Image (cartoon, rainbow, N blue to C red; front, top):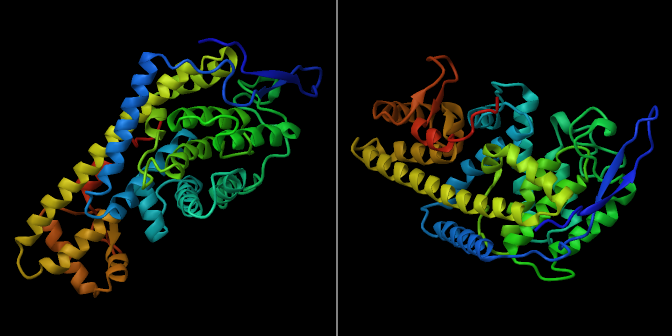
Length: 388
């Protein structure tokens, strides 16, 4: 349903006679209300079913924390790639455990910040409702170091920003001016808390994401935080016990359609077209996440059986194998520290795993050698190739 503009334009102070205007969105929910026809209702049901299956998977995973450790980092890489970083999952794992960066330091620092912001937000959700205060705190972590650290981390912007172009006059989109931010954000916070009307979770997440990106409340990091908002909503409202659903890969694979639909909502009010795209993304992503979790679980179980065949050394080798499920790239030193085993024991265990074809030494026999759990990494790495 096309409603026309979902907000209004206001003129901005001009520079050298150039006309520019900012878009101020109407509060949610849409008016007139969303039309959930048979197709959309069916998509809502399919997406909720897929979410439920994914959530149920956490009860059968031998150790959900092992899967989450790497899966959260995959999401961090994907979300940051959309913003232009070239960091890979391997780059991030090396950086976190060894301080080594195979790409520009700012790129991998940005991804590392994302992991910290996500973990911080999920922990704070145990004490705080999803609110403007919490979003500011998470943003403070997201931009705490590296490229965005001088762009007012944890503070709503006090100056005009824009998307695309070199200035408001030639931008693709210009969000509300700073003096109107608090009104826009206050209305969004109310909507998140079912004021003025209770909104079904999937519809709420879809609408809130667009509204956040439209308001663009920070000088930097809006895209990453807007994507995190979706996952935080699912966890805050109990649809997921663990943060297992991230739409960054789906948005990355369909990024032009994603950007076009955001702009279309603003210009035509066709919320239903956006909701259709979003719901298909949730179902597809939940299904893929479940497949990934099962593939990793099956691989680890098969490899564990293989390790048992080596006899007495299997005990230490199994401990190293378990560590590799959380940290698929390790060095002898980090494994020794993490497992409180001696360097010779770790070295011997990794040699056994190497002979079984489970790990690969990646540094050509140099001092401070790294070992990669290749098959595990291959499953995790699907879709994380940097954007050309």
